Amino acid sequence: MVYFRQRLSAEKDAPDSREQARMERFRRKLGRSALYGTYRDVQEFESTVRKDLALVMHEMVTIARKKR
Image (cartoon, rainbow, N blue to C red; front, side):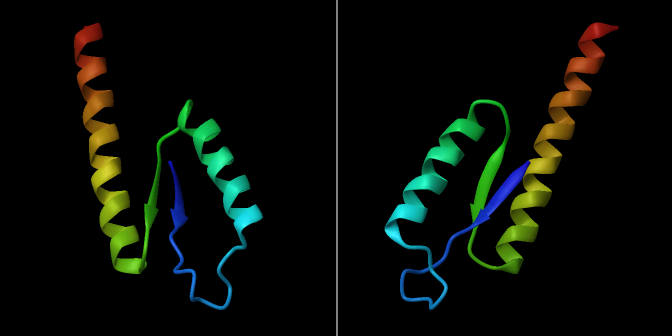
């Protein structure tokens, strides 16, 4: 699981358009083999990770039960 912070373009450390394009290509490539998401602040990061982790764990338990 990989998470990217969404920055507002007005922020002083916001990436330039070339860097944004590179990150978008990386995200698309990553999306083929990994779960990724975005967040805006710490609270959203925490809730997103918790939700995604619960989903992944549920899938793993479901798969393990089917193998029995």
